[in-house]
Image 1 (spheres, helix red, strand yellow):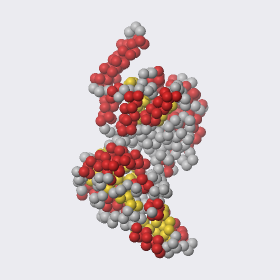
Image 2: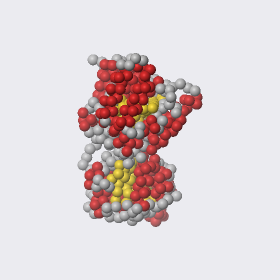
Image 3: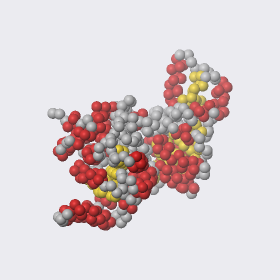
Image 4: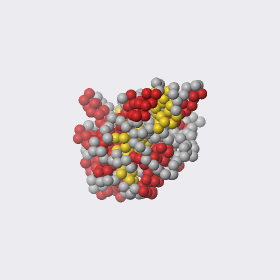
Length: 567
């Protein structure tokens, strides 16, 4: 028996379907997502929760003429499936295959590339203003999750959108989570509407009354005033409307008919920006993901290797627990990544000493700087790709004031299937140019714990950069020790050539030296440990003795470790 999904080649095909066919299509898409992502890996739970939303969106709007902008891209798999990419969906997150996020290089339906959070409203507003300036006629829609909407960039965009008053729609996909549960005052505000039954009951009664009054359609605007009053019972200050957006919702994000009604209202509204508040369930329709949405946010895939060797992230978290037991001043800050940074055990052991600040990287860094001014020891646990969002704060708020803290930089270097937006290959370049900052990269998981211990006790601003994935499998020392800052180590002696390596490139360099030895070429291998300051004495001594020197790193060439050695 043929499937409905087999007949879907563009959004135009989705528009032709009946209500029952749409429900069947949603079910088939769920099956396809689970089957494919279980093999390729990817963001499963968030995509399962956005299927009906996506179908309704493409039925009401006319992409690619109408511009649909997805935030992050964690919710865009259904969008890919129904915009002509199903035949390549099995290549998701594979080399040469489909991106795990939206990409302008991939499809005309992807109007804006994504990967980092909170960018969609700014991009959509830019498109709306461009339309107005060019006197064009199309609609612009941004889809953003309740986690990303707490980011400062999103709030800045809301502020300007309300000020400019250009027609556009923001769809708030509210599932109560980013990766882990959404945190902060904004999250609590939205939860009031999501869970308060008084609002839903009162809204239903209000609309029933209006339907029974003659000229009910003409009373629609009066109905909106009733709705605003009802919302006032639950939310004394309606944030979105105070910002200048007309609010529609909350809408059941798994009821296609209700979604289409809400999107039609937003599309036909001509007096400024609209926010459609959609309530969804992360992992919808797949019971394991509904039960454990954090675990199923990102799955590894069938071909992933599993072993008993701890990951670098796990070693980081274990080391933080060890140090925190000895030093009550140590605090850990993470921007919405407690799971990715393996910090749940730390949070359980020290519940008042870990701060998940949400998707707010800039705030995370300056918040840590404030803690440092009063002699606390903040450790900012953050992915390399996200740290670049706080570049100014690192310089202005931390390093120029020489406020001691630690940047624990996870996912440094190449991260593979997460794609071009998530590679950690720029950090050495931008960190080494900043004054008053020490930059280190361990060769293995044991050295990681010692460098973290060194950083916490250094009295300096120090960044410790480590990779994604499992460690090298070396034994972990029971006792932590400090490593002299700016000192490397010679791991292997040879007079024909020298390899200067940093981070996990040291392991590859040792393997290469072993291969070369079998070919009669003796190679010195040096673990630089520190990219800034370099061990200049060791490097110069090596250069005097050995003519052929090679540097190895997982970073862009310009501004990286090799450039520092040449300088």
